[in-house]
Image (cartoon, rainbow, N blue to C red; front, side, top):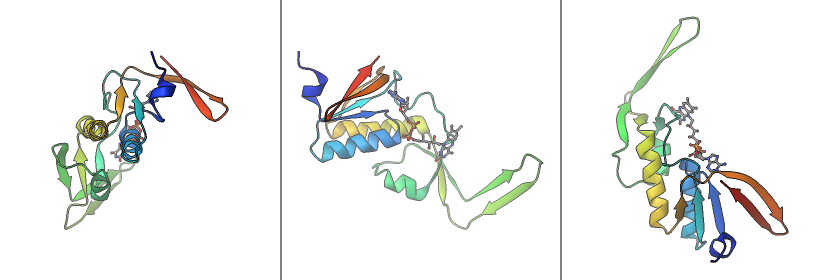
Length: 138
Ligand SMILES: Cc1cc2nc3c(=O)[nH]c(=O)nc-3n(C[C@H](O)[C@H](O)[C@H](O)COP(=O)(O)OP(=O)(O)OC[C@H]3O[C@@H](n4cnc5c(N)ncnc54)[C@H](O)[C@@H]3O)c2cc1C
C-alpha cells in the first residue's frame, strides 16, 4: 500500500473555514491535497456565535446562503457593569450563520475540487525530515 507521503503533496490540518479554504485552493492549484479533521464530523462541536460580516461571507465563495439564519442591522453591547451601547445601520452589515452548515458547505467545496478528507484524524505531532514534514495521526 502506498504511504500518504506518496499520495499527497499537501496536508491541511483542521477542516474549519481556514483549513477548508486552504485545501480548496491547494487542490485548485493542482496539489494532491489531504484534509485532516480530528472530530468525527465537520463543523461540530460549534464554538462560535456565528456573527459574520457580509464581506467575510462573500469571501467564502459559497454559491448558496442556506447557512444564513438572520441578517443583522444593529447590535446592543452590554458591559460587565450593565451599560448598554446600541449600534444601528440602515442596511444589513452582517449575518448570523449556522456555523455547522457553514463549515460543512466550505468543506464540500474543497471536496468538489478533489480534496480527500479524513475525519477522526487528530494530528499529534509534526516532525521535519529534510525537506519533508512527517505527521503523526491518531
Ligand atoms: C465562543 C466563541 C464565539 C465566537 N463567535 C464568533 C462570531 O460570532 N463571529 C466570528 O467571526 N468568529 C467568532 N468566533 C471565532 C471563530 O470561531 C474563529 O475565528 C473561527 O472558527 C476560526 O476558523 P479556523 O478555520 O481558523 O479554525 P476553527 O474553526 O477552530 O477550525 C479548526 C479545525 O481544526 C480542527 N483541529 C484542530 N487541531 C487539530 C489537529 N491537531 N488535528 C486535526 N484537526 C484539528 C478542529 O477540530 C477544527 O475543526 C468565536 C469563537 C468562540 C470560541
